[in-house]
Length: 417
Image (cartoon, rainbow, N blue to C red):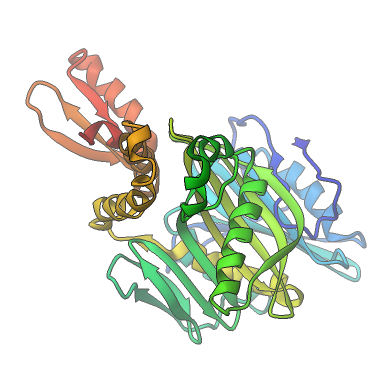
């Protein structure tokens, strides 16, 4: 296992650990038990052992033991307490050839340590995680258990999100949503138009009229900071408490599977708002720059008061994973974004003829990634069908083995005229 440490304690959230190559055999490791429940899919791999070390050392040792069971294991982040008595890791892996997502929890007490790995398919893990963790008698450690969860439809009918009692949707529009409750707050899928410095320089004095920040898309952290600074200025002008980022604890780049999106990172940071200190975990994504210097910034984040962030994170992550966008919103989202951007585009309409096409294609890439499907077409009959985005290429390749060049992928950006 090759581990990338970021020079901070393991109480930070995102420190990607890149693991290794797939292992053919997936036998249950010695000393571990695999628990299931007929009520849900997924499983829980558990181990308990004597010892007096901390949770970090226990998790490190356990990962080396379970590596033969989890193929293509990739750790996405780690969160531990300052006493090193509990450490949680988010991970993806393959089990018997199928992709899974899960949560590993290492806990220690005097003379004993326990490790639980709850895992299920990416589509159902958010719903089954509480039951899976409960199989090991750890219900008291799982703050998502015992809450009254309900699926709430967005007020504009553009999607839904699962929220516990006490939470309210504050804003929802075209698949974007923000909500808050006793465990913290979430803002999901919000896109912000941004102009590069070079693009603003070409516009000269007209750049001051742009309803967007002026930033270069150098990296997700600086983009996040710049967009938040711009938003804070707007909040101050409106007489609302303005958030101010005080510390970026850690940031870890992640891969992007789609064209039109250039960089992405999980960012663990703290901010001050109205005299209170908050901690947040964000997924920050930078879109590709258009020929006019404009680009798009996407963010999803969860936040809570700093002192209760670690305790509330499992609840926030479950809310994050539960959000869904309605199918009919895909085209509406594109049209709405273009309408907003057109207000800024009128300023430099005479200086570029390609701006609108570039924005449409950029939004199409993001919409396709957000929807998770791609169109494939039978070139002989013209028939089209939606398939899973990640398997579209393989499906076309398989179909064309029987009839070469008959089928092709049709990215959403190619459907825009």
